[in-house]
Every structure is written in C-alpha cells, then in structure tokens.
Amino acid sequence: MKLARFLPALLAIPLGAQSSPQYGTRMGQIQSEYLDGPAGTQSILEERMREELAEKLRREIELERSPTATPVTVIQNGLQAGPPQPRDKGPRVDFETWVVQPTRDFAESVVPKDEDFEREAGRATIHRVVRDNFRNISVTYTVTVETIPSAKTFRVTFSDSAIPYPVPQVLRDGEVIALTLMNDARTGRRLVDYIRVTTDLVRPRKDVARDIYADDAELTIAQPRLRTNGVEQEADNPSGMVSAQVVWVDVPGQGRYDLSFKPRAEGFERAGEVSENSLMFSAGGNIFRIDCADRIATGSGTYNIYARKDAEAPADPTRVAFGARR
Image (cartoon, rainbow, N blue to C red; front, side, top):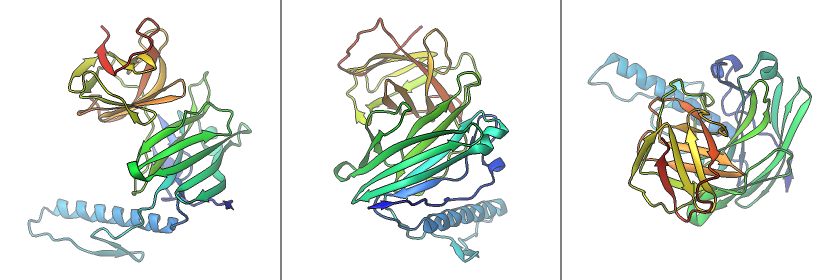
C-alpha cells in the first residue's frame, strides 16, 4: 500500500530559537513515519508537552528547596503533567534536516518532506525529497527500515539517489545515521539529514557537531567496542585505554584509520562526530561506531571527527586494535 503521507511536527519551535546559527540550524520541524501504521503523531506531541511540563514543575519544586515537597499534577491545555502516562512504543523513523554554518537565505529556502510511503508489517519504505528553493536544487533518496525482532534492532537500507549513501546498516534503538545531502566545498556549508529509528520519545538535537577549540585536544579511548555497519567486531584489547591527539584503529577487513579532532596532516577529512562516550565516523560507504566506558572528549559538546586511511598499515587486519600515533 502506498501512502502520500506527511506526518506533521513533533514540536513546533521558531526557527531562530532552534539553535545557535554559529554551527547549524534545523530546517523546520522533525518529521516522523511509523513502521507499523500511523499511531498518531498528535500523541507524540502531547507526550513531549507532558514531559516538558513535568520538567518545569520539577525545577520549580527544586528551587523552593522544600523538604516536604510532593509531586503535583498540573493541567495545562488539557494535558496532565505528573507521573509518566502510557504511550505508544511502536518503532518509527525520525528525520531532522540541518544546515551547517547557514546563511539566512540558505536557511529560509530549504523544505524537507516525505513524498511517498510504502508500508508492510514491520517494514517501511520512505521516498524523501529535500529541496533548496533558493538554489533550485532538489535531493531525493529512498530509505527502507525493517525490524529485526530477534535482536531488537533495525536494518536500514538506502537506494534511488545520486548522493553517496552508506551500505546497509544495523541500528540499535535510538541510533542515528547522518546523511549528507549537499556539500559546498568553497564555503563549508552542508545540508544533512539526521535519520533516527526509535521506539521511544527522543528529544531533538540541540545543535550540529563543531570543531574542538583546543589544538592539543586528545581522544581518550577506554574499553572500546567497535561496530562496523552495526555488526560488533572482536577486539584484541577490549579493556585497554589509549589517549592521544591522533588515535588509530584497525578494522577487520577494512584496514587502519587515523582519528583526530582536527585535520592534523594531509589526507584527514571530516568523517563523523563524537559525543560523550560514543564516536561515529564514515569511510567508503561504511559507518564505524566506537562505544567507550568513559567520555572520549574532555568537553561536553558534540565535536567533529577527522579521519584518514593509513595506506602503510596492514591492509586486512583480522581483529580490532587501537593505538596512539605520536
């Protein structure tokens, strides 16, 4: 069954209030499609409003610093803020379209939408178009998402597009794929779709990744676990720790990659981002995710990761290994 269906926003936020224009601006609103049928976008909007009301109430109670304070139920616009209410847990696909380092005319001209939709049990195919009216450019692609019940994960496959897209991926609940739609090499401005598959209510991104300020910033890789396109890889030193300005990782079947917060030498290109204890980078259509036991960057933001492939390292390692390049 085909549906020319566009689900409205989860939360309407004025464009200027969505994020600082220094790094990026979200274009319009989050767009969502359910894998198992429309469970009601309005219910997601109402649940998010309840959470925000409950959070506001919690802060007000903390400010009063009353040791006898008890939970209070607040009714606003017909919505109850208090204990969490039951909500639909059905899997869905969220799309957030961002312009990185936008100018005003660029930001106001971008219109993303889901043009067509096909649904089967536990599987959805979305035909998506993002148009920049100011530059008269359109980007289209198709993404198919299906549930893998035994593993509680999702298989994501891209097709029907002239832009580079990753090979099929396996995502855990809540994980994101960053798909670059347009890239202006002269100005550094990029148009990106952040695609998330989830069964829970997830807050929107606050901003896009940025370059770290410190020239001597080091990556700290502690007890890392590597996944290639969603498949976990066996590591030589799963309990070890590496800290350096440039860290290398051997990826089975792929080779060795150097990673850094900055393009410190020839061949480094922006390839991904790091936030808290997770790092993601892409190369050759593959997406590599590194999850660590501790924070990778010293700051609390989301930072760009630069990568290059080491042509002089072993071409086909059989196990994951990490090391520091001095």
